[in-house]
Image 1 (spheres, helix red, strand yellow):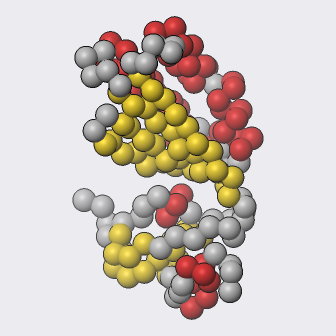
Image 2: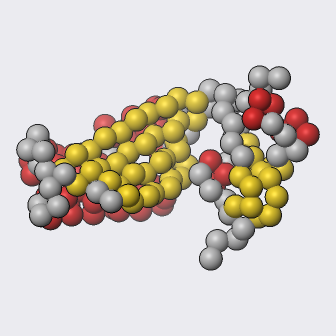
Length: 157
């Protein structure tokens, strides 16, 4: 079981970073031969990313909700993310296979959203939680003093 940290914490991240949300949706449940390879491809890429911190990947959190698998990833920069997407053999192979096997037939959907977060332009709070989300990739610090409120944490006060 995860180590719950009693109290209020916030995450501190030095510099800018990227939040990348990526996922897939199973549109045709019986098309197992189409969506299982898509889901499996992500596992290999995640292993590669965690084993090679120089790629700029900071960490991720996954969730499954009915037909949709979502992963929230944190990256050091957009340049790191883009370089991985354009040049990593595992990603390029997975993308090619997806286009050949699924393409636009509608059986499986994929999506991503990219957010560039400038230094200091974020806020988060974790109360009685284990390290989670940005708190897993940043430094957890007490949400007290000048970090007490959301307005203070996001540097608007």
